[in-house]
Length: 233
Image 1: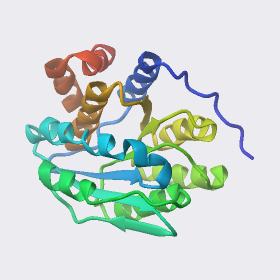
Image 2: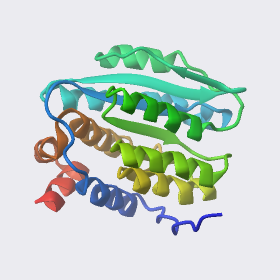
Image 3: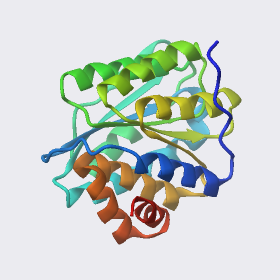
Image 4: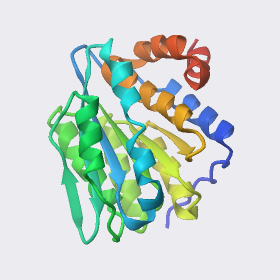
């Protein structure tokens, strides 16, 4: 098994700081036009207690992207027995919220590797600028998942990983997914919804307008996003 990175400290402040340090180093890949983002979620049974909360945090992405040419989002999720579904593209936050609200969690194994492979296919067709993944655990071969993440790194597709809970395997693997794809990683819980909204907004700003857009967003929003602005200066 490949050597794992040390787990990231569980405190919200240190996790946010690490996320901002990683996103600071991202290259600017956007050249104008609408950004395209894949919003991917683990919908297995372990996520059910906090699913509705997670579904309510995505609106900030559209707010952040509107002034930058806009953002198209496609929802992806896995659940149950080998079920993996992807929605149509949408530029409407309310429509995305409706799609997410129609999903119910089902018991099953994680399919992170499959998700990353799909993202790679979309990237090769020039149909994707960034990926957000929200999950709480991994039940797959971590080396294989790491391989798929490395392929996205070669394609220049960053994955922004948001971990819910303290699963040990996820705490070691999820930061590696972010590192291999040159994305960023952050933990969250139900006690920090505003913080998570701002960080999702930062991801959307990057997808829609590159690093320069991150600076603008951080200046306007303050808080965690302002920390990002200060670091990038």
